[in-house]
Amino acid sequence: MRVGCPKEIKNNEYRVGLTPSATREYVGHGHQVIIETGAGAGIDASDADYEAAGATIAADAAQVFKTVDMVVKVKEPQPAEWAQLREGQILYTYLHLAPDPKQTEGLIASGVTAVAYETVTDGRGGLPLLAPMSEVAGRLSIQAAAHALEKAHGGRGVLLGGVPGVACGKVVIIGGGVVGKEAAKMAIGLGADVTILDRSIARLRELDDLFAGRVQTRYSTSTAIEEEVFAADAVIGAVLIPGASAPKLVTRAMLPSMKKGAVLVDVAIDQGGCFETSRATTHAEPTFEIDGVVHYCVANMPGAVPITSAHALNNATLPFGLALADNGLKALSDDPHLLHGLNVHRGLITNRAVAQSLGREMVDAYEALAA
Ligand SMILES: NC(=O)C1=CN([C@@H]2O[C@H](COP(=O)(O)OP(=O)(O)OC[C@H]3O[C@@H](n4cnc5c(N)ncnc54)[C@H](O)[C@@H]3O)[C@@H](O)[C@H]2O)C=CC1
Ligand SMILES: CC(=O)C(=O)O
Ligand SMILES: [Mg+2]
Image 1 (cartoon, rainbow, N blue to C red):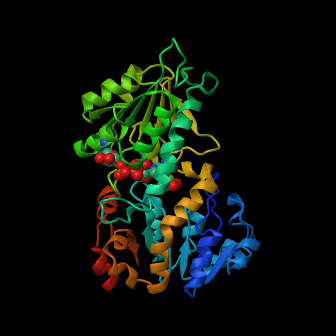
Image 2 (image 1 turned 90 degrees about the vertical axis):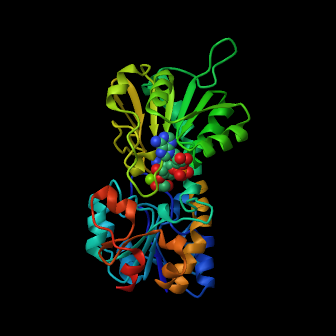
Image 3 (image 1 turned 60 degrees about the vertical axis):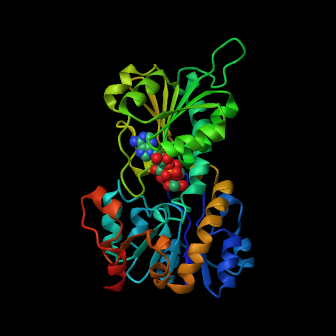
């Protein structure tokens, strides 16, 4: 198969869909790999590094999209990219379609077979291609909160760890999955007072055992969320209902009761955000303020640390990517976990949560592949 990787074009996105070491694996499986010139610049990988791994370098993205059977990316295709996709081609990348009807329309119109990293599953109930970036974003979320809490950045002017004789800051994490756990590790490391809310008691038990008294856990009800958010210096939004739009757990009406200069970090923004007042921001302009509360809503947080993120992402995407390149659409019908990643195929939406969030019809993925 011809496998291609264009340079990412989203704002301040420096990751790359294929690293040189992943490229070498595809080439080792007998595939032809085509990389856009400069695609690896953000992770310190030169065209020569890709050529040494066996790739051919394309002069521009158009050449990649035109020639390849499978496009491997990081971020959801931008309008200029989805216009170049076509039927018979596989797109393998993050999509986050639930809050994005325009992109969904673009993918439907293209006829492409679009496999979303974030809805591929594993046998333990996890999301193996989302997890590495959730680990990065969870850890970054506390750096982002600490930075935004500084007075000069619009925040309360609180040091999360405090100092001897002065209370530390209070961090509230809503959603104790991968993002939530990693955020908690970092917040504890800084010396903050940390509370995690989740609606899974089993998950709260695991976190309680893991952090051995260093975090408070609370079952996530509207009352618990209000009490915790009103007392917080920083709130990390880390909930997920796979494939679906995030539930709005902090409403606009709650903001005036929050501390002035408190910070909301909405990591769940790529699924539409779990705070009512969130709107996606970029690394170039990451924050905005509403009712005295600072909002940080960057939808590609791991893009800020591309060397860490691109390698972590490629480690996870490689086995499924090789299966797709080796076996084409058969890889999907052979593996129910990879099939969960199929969001759009030849103009049909094949993921239930995506279709429900968009109010669209869903076609069973097996049926869509057989049609
Ligand atoms: N902004 C960015 O750059 C990035 C965003 N993300 C996003 O972060 C979000 C979280 O991802 P993961 O931690 O991997 O998901 P996860 O599935 O590991 O964890 C989500 C947790 O939310 C909990 N939850 C669901 N509804 C809840 C509610 N009403 N109240 C409290 N908890 C609730 C679940 O029980 C689960 O424990 C996703 O939307 C993901 O796409 C991930 C990576 C990067
Ligand atoms: C998960 C995701 O959207 C990201 O890593 O940017
Ligand atoms: Mg994202």
